[in-house]
Image 1: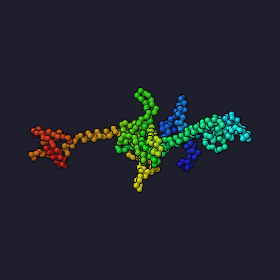
Image 2: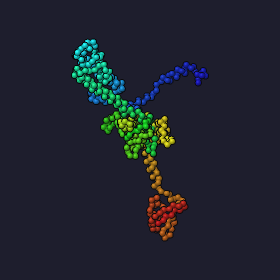
Image 3: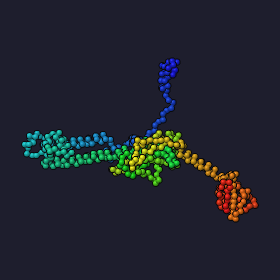
Image 4: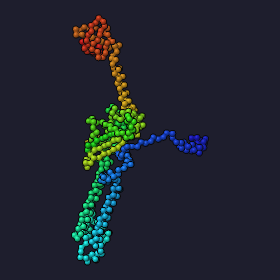
Length: 432
């Protein structure tokens, strides 16, 4: 504004803006804690200094399945090339030892048939090795009955080729049908929420399945990952505590046909019992969710995982409804899968809310024990069986309580048992 009016030069203002932007903030950003489980379900753990590497070779098949695709294809290609070259060398040695490495003109004039026809060099022996192992059989080269050794090598190469093919096909099938592939269509909400549900503070998140084929015997397991210290002073960097989901039969089984909101009641047994809205972001916790079940189409057990850190937990929110009934069927709108709305929710922890309710109930009980005041306008009259009635002056009101069954009258009057008390505006009648 001053620069526009010409009171200050524009160069001065630009210099001041640059200086202000260059000033470093006095508040350091909070260091981001490493996640134990990433959002896509992979374990964020690095295994280092493993001395016994030979244990992986004892289970070669699992090691092959766990490798990346490019590494697996490189190993299979190398295995085929190595086997072809090895048996090509064997066929060339057989032909060389039998004297078959001659020109085609000399071979036709020979009286003794060769062990393998049409092998004149290492290249022809390599081509014959490929034809034998992959059972192509072009017909130009074949093994004769002249050399029993050649027949034995033919059998060995066929068996070796079958073994390599079996291992390759098995690894490819397991890599394409392994459990984490089915988990790609099992989705979790990006954020979890904390809000009251049925009068109790609860942690909730949403889970869904995008496929029509069901997950049989699906179960949900929740764990809190936190750093803890034992009574002896031992520091446990990753302490895993199981937390129970809300289920009337106290099991973790779910029927995942449509998206479900999984709820955990924050009670005295919950690790989140002392967490409030103010202390949530400062908590060093991670909530891990594990969904496990059997794939209906393949029968393979699958597992989907995710986690929620304090920055991904929204206090005082709940999920919007995404299921509606349309034309005789239930429709699910996945565009609102992670949408939430704000609700009225106390910022106190579950412990503080429970203590507040206890104090409130104690105050209500004390006020209710005092009973009705005798100075009220409600009169009191007592009638006996004989019809005799006494006035209000004959009753000592100091002995009256809501649960009274006998009342001591003034001196000189006998004690009468009170059977019923009828409150009527203007008077109250006591009947024997």
